[in-house]
Length: 214
Image (cartoon, rainbow, N blue to C red; front, top):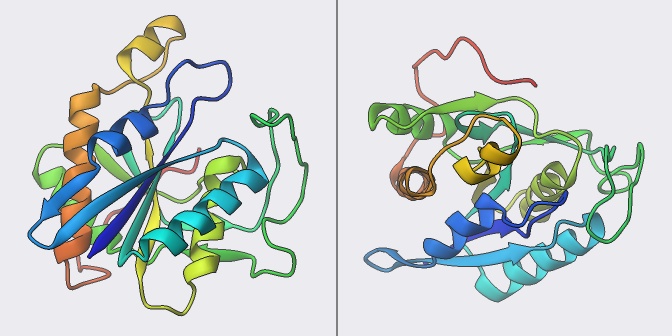
């Protein structure tokens, strides 16, 4: 069984992207008969969709978790919904800056994650990892990949979704922002994958009263 884990190349003038630093270090066996296959996606709107589609064809995964950087967040953010909107605050790495465009023409307005988010969140918090549910993945390349992923796998019964990670301490030192050590991110994402693999539920009776919107 393959689990596809994606991260992004650096963008916005950064020299490093923690999403890829985490993903590449988890490439390999996760559990007996289960392997994580990591892929780095370009931080560019249309090229990222093409690279994601190629990775899905190559790996034929049973579970997919896409990772991205969210500067300003202090926790591992499990994203709940992807919207069919590109509205770029800055140009992507190819120089494109679409405004008010759909990710998929004539696609539905939104898709929900098909990961067992609440069991994953409960498990991460029980293990001491800062984690939360988020109700927006933004309108930049992270949301584009999340939406494209859910669109590509719609109706197939596979577990797939997106998680944002914070800045690394060295990034926060240059421009103040919440941060998390790379080792903690790696441990948290590894546990999230195990929970996604093992959970038999897509929801629990645990009530989480709020999520991240900003």
